[in-house]
Amino acid sequence: MAVKNMILAGAGAAGAVVAGLLGGWDTGIQSLCLFMLVDYLTGLLVAGLFLNSPKTARGALNSRTAWQGLLRKGASLGVVMIACRLDLMLATNMIRDGTVIAYSLNELLSIVENLGLMGVPLPRQVVRAIEVLKEQ
Image (cartoon, rainbow, N blue to C red; front, side, top):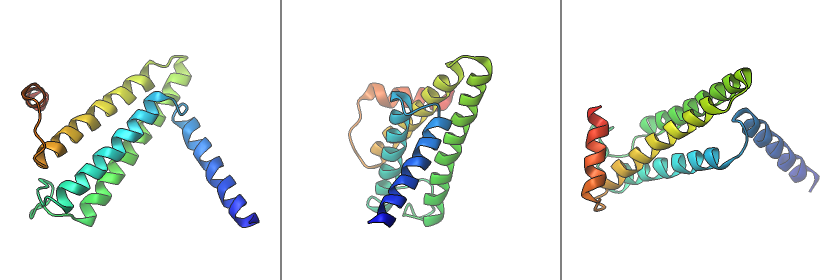
């Protein structure tokens, strides 16, 4: 029982440190983490079940590509940490919040693309908005 409590305490402390470095566990970070999770899971579905991934030659699941996706998401959170530190230096919260919003929109775009690759019908306006974003 004591070992379990020590492990849970350590995990809680590590989570608190990470949340602090991200500027707190507010709605923005919670949403970004949720979007990252949904994007990763839908990406796994596209490759693993639908065999329709544009990221691999066969469209199938590839462990290297999956790890690269996780590393990119980790790097994105690293940028959020840097933005948070810049905000602390400048006594503002605009840089971190803008960074979180930008990454959240990027994750949402990827989720919609994954849904399209799975054959989920998308409203024409959403498809057009994605085309416009890709062009820019």
